[in-house]
Image 1 (cartoon, rainbow, N blue to C red):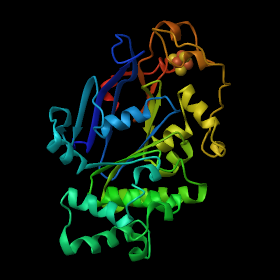
Image 2 (image 1 turned 60 degrees about the vertical axis):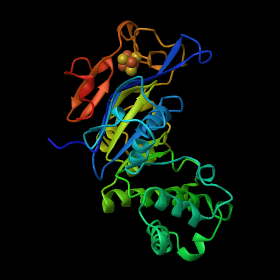
Image 3 (image 1 turned 90 degrees about the vertical axis):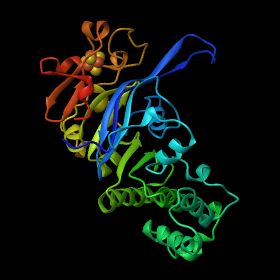
Image 4 (image 1 turned 45 degrees about the vertical axis):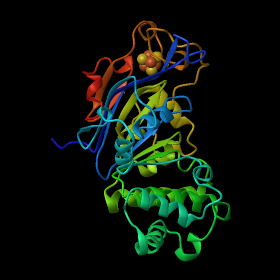
Length: 331
Ligand code: SF4
């Protein structure tokens, strides 16, 4: 069996409630497992507050999990710490943030941002820098590169700024890009261009992309596999086409109902939405919003079930099917 490019196993993260000294903690991520292969795009979808950004920060090593494993090319990432380890990791795993304006320094030109990454990770120096900057800009569709390189962030459109952010990530020649809501601040036409750019990168360079989004339509367009996160847990995962055509979890179906053209790929009836309330302490976190919730949903957390090949669902409705091991989510 091939070693996955990136593998998360049972990542868990909690934060203190009511200040850093408080003993009470709220679990934001619970036992999250998945794999990302070379040249693959995995979409991590969920509403705001589902734990997506916390997971992105853990994977980018901007934060450390309370428990769980993280492996890159089979190497135990969490076993190493310090600046050298951090720099080496960032040379392999890059992040593209939601707000390209905030992630670019307004007092520096586009060329400065790209040169800085090239120098920091020793990908180019001296006379090689300028041609490399121009080649990077051309690779993300920013031409004429000589002109664009001299511009400041405020002289670019939102789509151009996000392409610069992608070019900066590419300067490092990463194996993995974590794209955290990279198109959510762009208009629809610009969004499509950035999605096409990311899709091309997986094909041409074999980069694995973890695409974090609240937008199932974008996930449908871009991703090979989908991971649906609710209240910090994976509730459904599988091939994108399979999950979006035959969603099994009521939460996935609820997300699909919010997609304007969701009917194009949704083949099952939607449940009615019910008002949210406090989640039962022992049961399913989605129970207060779920129209199918019954006694067992309030009494016991649902395990993972495998209703179809590579399609996993965390819901008691699937309990007649086989039960999967949580750690088997990556497969
Ligand atoms: Fe709804 Fe119960 Fe399934 Fe949770 S386990 S999603 S409450 S049916």
